[in-house]
Image (cartoon, rainbow, N blue to C red):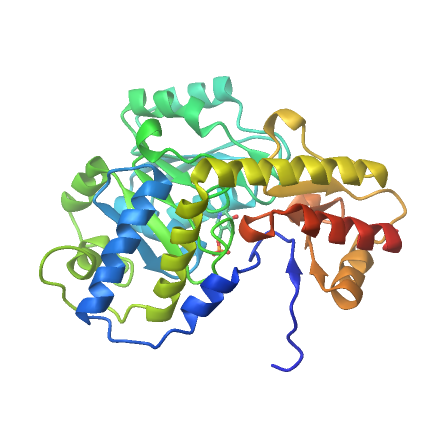
Length: 365
Ligand SMILES: *Cc1c(COP(=O)(O)O)cnc(C)c1O
């Protein structure tokens, strides 16, 4: 553990944690049914509703990272044979399809070129092609740095009668997420991206319609740990009962991270991400570096940067980490070796961090 030193986390997650959150994590552990802890749980639910912009009763953090949130949304809603459409343009769309297939769903994947967004017209045709139970899309595709137009797709999904399932892991806190405005039915996120809390919890929200689908299942949810109909006996109601031991200190951390975000203001946080992004793009231009994604659908919190010809991208990343204590990410899948992924997530999204990175990159290039 002695080798672990402060590192500027400018990769695709985790992001840097504020001191306030780090301190919250070290508060004394108390019991998971302690009345004082129940108060903290209820406050976390209320703050999550504000951050997700929803009135959904069922809005809780799942124990596990963002992927546990993905798994929870699919496993609670899918029964074998159900039709699911995934609008896919990156790693996390591929993962959604994999998760849904493992649950026995009939999965159709409408694929869009990586580095470009889901095209609404083509998505509309796919959505209308047959009656789907679920249509799923990733808001902020962290693997490519592309923002998908969740809001433009929303009315199409709603009109089709399908449940709208949205991945907001990277967007929540850094881009407007409007669960009720989109009429989204199942949305999940993670603590380790723009919420600036360590990895370990996955906020999830279910609409009343999604809850009805869950209640009307013909068989039990096939995963006991993630079964929301059981988890609600711990997270809701006057009398709480044991399901699994909540990760107490992580929930302290999330409580603090959400308070910090709401104190700052959602809009102010979104603007801070956008400003840091624009500053980064400008500074990279001075180094002769270009972004991989068109400005119209670039993510502010995840910047895909084209690796210049003749540069050993892995060596640069490794030396940034070893000599400058800065982490950035590599490309994935077809983009491996072609891009770097520079994160400006949560507390990391500040000018001085951009300056530190650009100075270090300039020296290495
Ligand atoms: C990071 C991420 C996930 C998975 O989260 P983990 O915390 O790695 O499990 C899912 N979706 C998107 C868009 C992500 O960026």
